[in-house]
Image 1 (cartoon, rainbow, N blue to C red):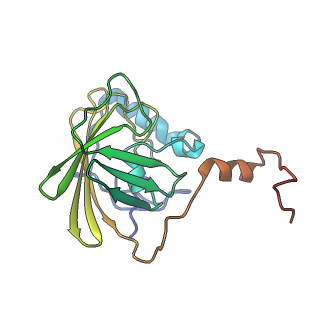
Image 2 (cartoon, rainbow, N blue to C red):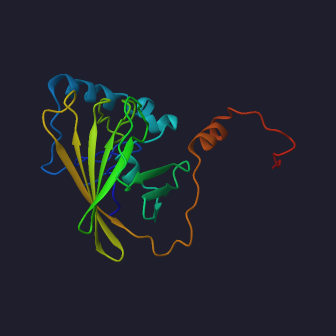
Length: 215
């Protein structure tokens, strides 16, 4: 079954624009603080308009990793880079021992990696508070700290885990886990420009006759 964590990290039935899916949260539940649980319910009620992806904002980490859009991984001696089909987004995970920046918030966080045996462990800090974990309204604050673990299981499978810590929103750390599978039938990464497609669908731009081909 295709991974549907980007719609809802937990077990969920089908809803409009949200296909059903099995949960990826270890233990099944996300440990929200009481006030944060209320905010999550409000987010869910307004998910069709308030989901950051509905406005073509960057998904943040970890959500970018389990969107249905594929991504490509590049590795050098100093970093691991990821290029995504979704809006040509990208990540750079520095593995050269450099430290994260202080006092700067990023839509995709600041990623610093290290190797523990054959597992790439990535600390992601300096998030803003404007991204969600899924369409269901699961959210975080600017204090979010994500620790990702990437482990090769075989030539075509990476086991992915991400542990979230955010004392403003959650009562304790919690973890998601899922496999990533290589697309062996894709010769290249394609492109999906969310904002451009949204503007064209809504008629929000003026067609320039010099570049627009009439029907």
